[in-house]
Image (cartoon, rainbow, N blue to C red; front, side):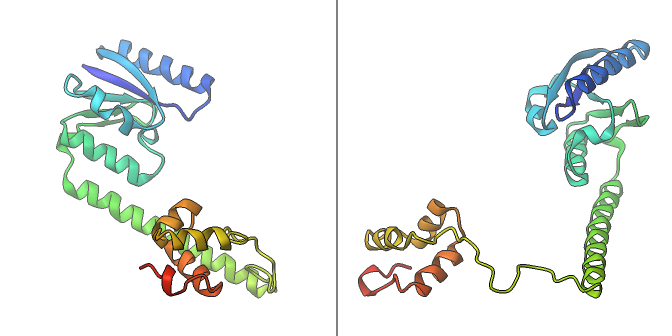
Length: 196
């Protein structure tokens, strides 16, 4: 028995079109389709479809994730649970249990190459902008509203109450290092409020 999966980040019209395409494909190819799941992430339905499912039918392979890494992780899940994956638009019919580790290593290499190309192209474009005379980054002397600005007394009181800097960071939604620098810069730490 197979299940269908549609990623619900598409428009309602597109979801209906994909749903009809999955049902039509199942009928034309004598595939017993138990049901069609619509969810934001294939990972959300993984435990639901086990153990009765032996295959997944998707409209296209990109439905399995928002990134190549997520798609690979979902294919690994299918391999580990002996689930086949059919993609009707792309024409892929993965007997996932037959996929080798080399296939997944190939995807890892593709992910790494893509990441490096993005980095390389970003650096190239930034250098072109610099060469054109465009100043990048925050203008010198720009006034930036900081998250902890104006909270000096509140933070001093928390330190006196022996609240850790890590907890203060969580409460204000900043990093622990930001709190350390803020406390030091504003002289909020004294002998009786010193906390590691």
